[in-house]
Image 1 (cartoon, each protein chain N blue to C red):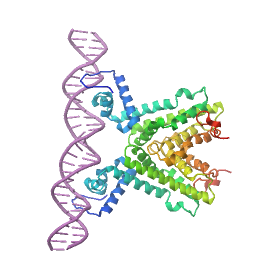
Image 2: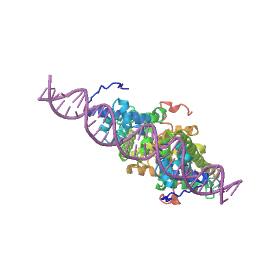
Image 3: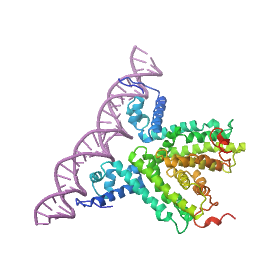
Image 4: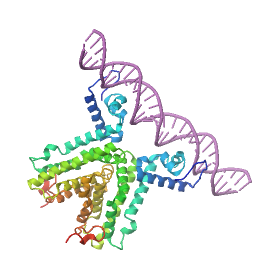
Length: 220
Length: 220
DNA sequence: TAAGCTATTGGCCGCGCGACCAATAAGGCT
DNA sequence: AGCCTTATTGGTCGCGCGGCCAATAGCTTA
């Protein structure tokens, strides 16, 4: 990336440099795994010396925690933007349908891997642990808002939006448990599981959450 | 454990020593995590020099993989013994009920952590990866047999025992995703999730899988 | 009892890691 | 213009790791 052959130094404002470091670390964590975030690795990506990264993050665990938060937040905004959760013009069904479709596709495998990674690493890293719990609740809360707005619209039948949000996320996390260890025997039974579960949980008609407008297609 | 102050050597038959090493590694992996399995750590537990462990496992990854397999197999036998899956005397409902109860309790948190650990580590370790997939399918197959025998008994209504087994395991893995990052807000909505899901999946009456004989208690 | 096989030791190597620190130079200030 | 703050360098330290190997000593066999 940033070619640094000679000795020319680039001096940046502390805040800008800090953001740069977090962004690089987040990218590494998301793509290669959180344990690949090391002072030297991040420094290499930025074309600086490792001591500089250590200067901004005296304890590497803090960098890892911050990187995870940044990555998770970014991905949440890509999967379920906050603007879409309140009084969505297309309706809550549309929003939820999109979320499930995006989450199930292989395009967001990196996200599933990140969560698996973070939840395991939380076992050893207290700082990360705290951030992971916070993000888990944030994701649930955003789903909860979609559900709640669907209830207001009258399209969802659900007594406890928070409980439903938690359970739908658990179903998602369950199927995503296998991103690193996929087996062909398991894919078929799981393809529709989350969607079906969500439909039951929210009192929707069968296939109501099928992507696009395919609902009426294959069931004559 | 094995006190080794002086220089006395204990020479054992290769196979016995090998088993000893795997058992020690499995214990470490289950309790402290798979990444804590190192030549030195295992050697210390056995009161032996690290070179010896390296002699039996020239590549550490093979030891980790074997340790995981041993631990996972042992836990499966504790949670759902193979003998209980075929023509169970107490019936499939009883067997499944027991499995779900054991799996949900905090007594088997180590097992949940182990799975989380193994699934994440599979990302980097090919040998482990292969073992993890194999174990996942083994666990599913054992659950499938319980379901199939329940169908034979006529107590389960289920078109695809394998598919149901896979989905029930996914629901279990979903709720177990949070063993390292538990949050009080999430516990209540999740307590009955797996059980309820399994009841729907197998066409059982509501609360049919409640532990013990509490089924008829709170619903007059 | 003596010999031979081999399980076991003890020690070494290079690696990447986090962490520390004095020296240096970039860029805003007067 | 020169100064002065501080972002950045470049290097060092100790650690635990996996891997390797010659020497040693325990058990079995002849």
